[in-house]
Image 1 (tube, rainbow, N blue to C red):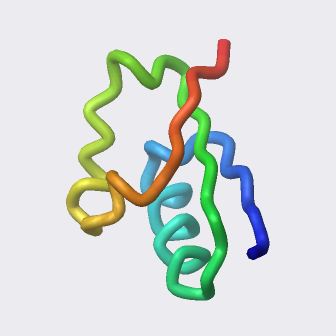
Image 2 (image 1 turned 60 degrees about the vertical axis):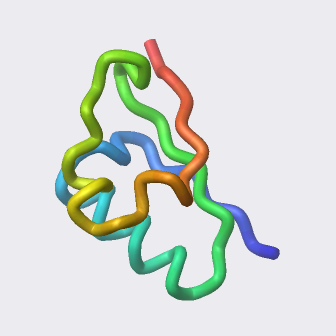
Length: 58
């Protein structure tokens, strides 16, 4: 399985890229400035929040 790392996955562009890659069969890892505090509303709106492995990046 191919793997992708998206820096800034909680933003609009990162969320749409994550959605595209998941549809293509990628395993997606995403970073955010503070993964514990972010709501990830863009990922939730697309219904992919639970499919992405998230990490904080500081």
